Length: 415
Image (cartoon, rainbow, N blue to C red; front, side, top):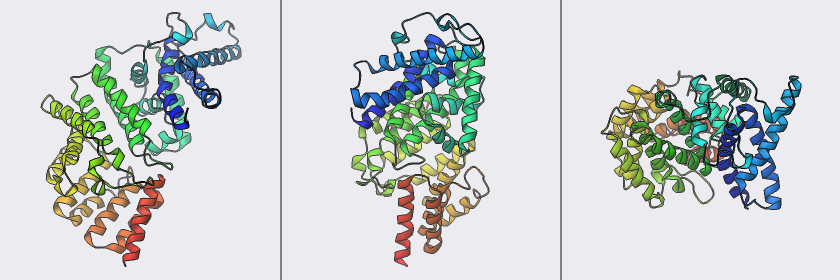
């Protein structure tokens, strides 16, 4: 099996295997450790020996054995009886006996998703744990997404696992009354997973298609479960409409291609049609939330035959609605761009000045990149070059660094 194919398979199977173990044995935190060791064993053995006929069953069997070893060691340290198969630690889940390799034969990913978003956890812990257990992101990637040190995120995830253990909830879908409490966190988690896949925060690649694909898959499952929820529909539509541009976002050498310069013939017409249909159906029904508004903005971009035909006044109006319900600095940044496209670059720059004191985005490369773009449009090439260079220094993604450095170099050459 090719290296990337094996990585994609393991990432897709990881939450299913974890869900199967938790359903059978409980012990969320220890089960997650066991699954990680099974994934490591697969990454070493499968390229050498070949992928097994039942990859999921292989992983469940190996992870179950490792989980048994870990629990026996834990119980021995605690001076408890060492017959692991007949014991469960207080506060853990107890499930009916089943054959380990066949435990949870269905896909338990969605149950795992809601479990990670249990109200016993803080919203930040819900998101961090789900990104780790369901999304497959590393602790370092999650830390970058939250703009906190990796050590801080490690402690947060550890506390989240302890909170899940202490909650003692069954491994099953929550009741409808509880489901509403967790839905906002679930949607945010899927949104972050998708964003990390569509525009990687670090590393040599511009995007990680497997993460974006997994987020879309989970959003489809959620939409199937809650077809009448406008925000669930809006999030799925937003993902489809955004991911439809993925093939055109990078050039032949992996370089970033901004939307205005993309070959729209490479956009996925089927995904655009599905996304437009979803958001068109969702908007007239019930309250309009932030994911629906973002999907509507994405639809306007996708339906424009070229960059010049984009309906920027409508996009600006939608961002203004979004700002009323979402105190998000990235939304404010995008609103400034829309205002610049309608009223001129100086109007956009005036709005950016108000974001300089917002600690959530003041150090982000995107603020400097947008300022550079608007200064260039306003004719201040020297200041624009300085902003592009500053943005390149702050960017963690190599394609983004190269793109910003290229913009700065081009302006220097033109002087």
